[in-house]
View 1 (cartoon, one colour):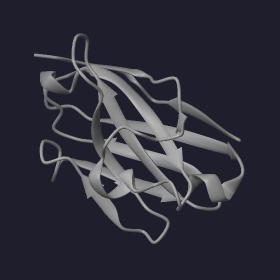
View 2 (cartoon, rainbow, N blue to C red):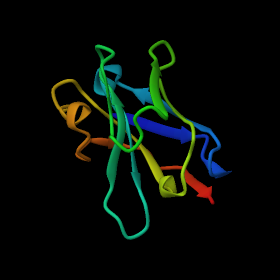
View 3 (cartoon, rainbow, N blue to C red):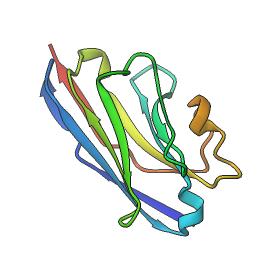
View 4 (cartoon, rainbow, N blue to C red):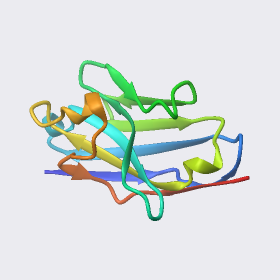
Length: 126
């Protein structure tokens, strides 16, 4: 199994930056694919960014050029650096992980991961 523990959420003004972290424990092969999703009140969960075991990344069009995801393999920790934040980014942010076999969502950002974190809140004020 896999446990995902996120940190780094909070409140920031528009234009500011935040960095989220997601520490994974458990079977490393189950975290070949890792990524970030977010869900705002009344909206569906949407993919933000993902990184595959081969280092390839995928970003939602809405965050390209402003968000960067990376992974420290030694620590099995995923990061999401968010810059130039907009109020529309306000949401719960969830870390997700999956094995290579089940991690096709790393390429299309559809929210069908097997493992999920609890989600830190990110609030961006105008």
